Every structure is written in C-alpha cells, then in structure tokens.
Amino acid sequence: MNSMGFDKEPKDTRVVVAMSGGVDSSVTAALLHEEGYDVVGVTLQLYDYGAAVERKGACCAGQDIYDAKRVAEEKGFPHYVLNYEDNFKNSVIDDFVDTYMQGHTPIPCVRCNQTVKFRDLLKVAHDLGADCMATGHYIQRLTDNDTMQSELHCAVDKTKDQSYFLFATTQEQLDFLRFPLGGWTKDITRDHAKRLGLLNCDKPDSQDICFVPNGDYASVVKKIKPEAEQPGEIVDLSGCVIGEHTGIVNYTIGQRKGIGIGGGVSEDNAPFYVVRIDPAANRVIVGPKEALARDVIYMSDCNWLADIPADGMAVETKLRSVSRPAPARLVKTGDRTAELHLPEPQYGIAPGQAAVCYAGTRVLGGGWIIAAENSALPMAA
View (cartoon, rainbow, N blue to C red):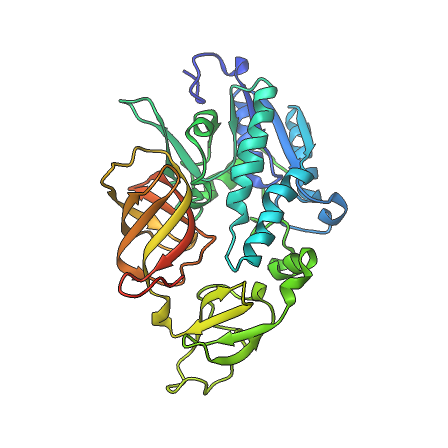
C-alpha cells in the first residue's frame, strides 16, 4: 500500500495536484513527485489575468500561476493552466455579491472549494485518469479501521486548520481527495520547501480573498451592483431613526465600529452594534450587545460526513472561521436542514456564514446559517 492508499507502486499512481502557486501546494506536488508518483499539476485561472498580475499574495493571481508553472518545470512534471473565469464568476463572485445584497455575510472560500475546486477541478482530475487529487490544505483525511470509511479531521497545526472552510466536502469527494500536509505544522512545510529548493519557499501566506483587492470587499460589490451604495436609515430596536447608513454592503452583523452614529444617542451612551440588516427596507438595525445573543441556529444546504441520530447529538460547533468551538446540540430537521441549540448564547452570528459541527477532531459536516434567534425572545434574525 503506497502513501496515497493504493495497492500499487507510486509510479503507477497518477495524482493530480491543485497548485495555487503558494508554498503549500508547491510542496505537496514536489514531495509527491519526489516519492515517485505520476504527478500532474493543475492551476486554475480564476479571474482576469491582466488585472491579476497586479495583485500580489493572492491565490491564483498572475504571479502565482507563473510560480506554479516554474515549480513544475524545475521538478519535471506536467502542469496545466485552465481558464475557469466564467465558472468562478458564476459560482463564487456572483454569489458573494448577491449574498451581501441580501444583507448576509458570505464566505467565498467555502463556495470556491464547494464548486470550482472540489466539483469542477475534480472532474478534470478524473478526465486526466487520476487515481486521486491532492491539495495543500491543512486538514486530515483519516480512515476508520472498522468501517474503512474516509473521515475528515482537523489539521495537527491548529493555527492553520482549514476544516471550517471544507465542511461542504462530500463523501464522494473526500474518498478521492488527499491532504498530505494535514499532519504537519507550517514550519515543517517551509523546511521541506527549502530542502526541495522551491523558488517560492519564502513566499508569504495569502491573507486576502483572492478577488478582493486590499480586503476592500465593498468595492467589488459596488462595481457589480452600484445600488449597493444607496443610503438609507439606521434605526434602533424600537424603529426610531437615529442615523443614515452609506449602503447596506458596508455593514455586517455584530459590527461596532464605523457604523456612523455619534455618541449620546442612547441614554447610557452604551455602544451600538449592528443587530440586523433589512435589505427590503434598506435599513440597518442597531442595538446593545445583549441584543446580539443567539442560542438557536437554523441551517440549510447541510452536508454531513457522518450519520446523525434521529434524536440529535451533542457536538461542538464553529459559527465563524475565527471562533472557538462551542458546545451545542445538533438536530436534523430534514435532508438538508438542521438546528443547533446552544446552552450558552453566542454573539454576532450572521446569516450567510457557516455552522460547522465537530466530534473531537472529526468534522461531521455543517450547513449555511439562514437565521438565528434567542429562545427567550421572538425570532431575531
């Protein structure tokens, strides 16, 4: 059995590696080639190349495509660049814009993994005759010794763990995928990059959403939907107008700073937070921090990588990529819907984000948050 889990020699095992041009995917490809696998690198051009070459440090930008190609050339394995601009715009950018216009907060990296990378690119890998596809994600694919079922587990390096962004990976996709770096820390990856002599061994990690220059997501939305800048009313929980907003795209649930309300509006001068966004009325609703408390989460378009008992189960859940897992009870309400009941309320839960469920390090799956409420109060969001 080789390291990819196949009962044949590495040279007889074709592995398609998704190469973004960063150090992680480059190390993945170079290491597998060093082990003797039949490696084929594939890089996706996801948005306008002319604009992309001006973007530094972004996945799949012009320089990154060049870096991926150079790594493949130096190591001596084939590499292809596929133009997926239309797929990316339709599946990721348009969804990103539409989600903001609905007053929700999108996660484009999840949509990209769910569609372009783990749907479209997997099809390419199959068409190329691959036995599996490998990526540089920091997450682990483990096999249960009793059932022989593939399971998704958090990465060893908690600071790099990408499990939140991969909850939508289906069982069929997981069976085909491999994540060679999931058991490593980033320091080990960089050490291998230097040992292998990779030209991008010191390349910094990408921090931005790849198609959002300098983190200015609002400019992307406004460019596609100019009406996103339409001003409107900021109201308190009682409906009193206390200010004017500059377009709902500039506001997110839980936001405190930059709302545009001066001091002295509330009796005790306590800070206001964005509690809800009403796109139909073009209103931003604000209130005190306690108004953000939610202990029931409603999810749709759920994906499960484990059997969930009919009467529910205790889990840990992450409601934002940067949040710590919190205890909850997961209850399925349909094939693709579910609820999470939290013993302790959480704050700043935004529709459009994901709720990802865990049992220890195992990723059980999750879904998209469509609403949340405080069980002691009427429906709140």
